[in-house]
Image 1: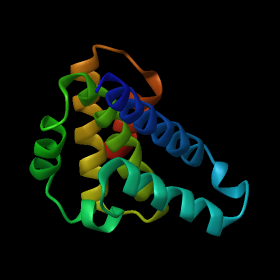
Image 2: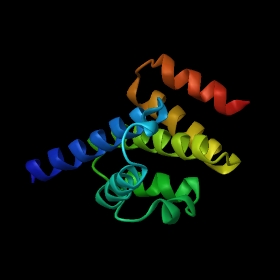
Image 3: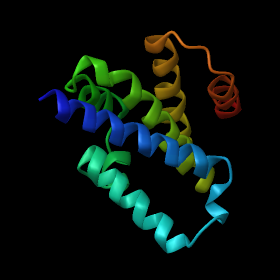
Length: 128
């Protein structure tokens, strides 16, 4: 059981790192089709649904999904969700994505107790 939890956390963190690279402009590196495939695979591995299905859920529904996970997994999930909606908002500006990214980033900072200047900067960017 411990190995399953470790595997889940590793998948979440790898997806989060992938999104961080994409946000920083890594989208120009590599084949766009390949990047989309990796993104879709990560979505299915992490959330068991597509991004479109996740995006249609309310913030409260997504928070409920995370709360069903092991408590130790909450912080990485909030960071990942912040990156995910931030990336999708950068890709295709959408006030709903921006609001979700802001909420998940703020929840991440609150729950983790970590001060992250890049995330604070993204929150400020999302407010405008």
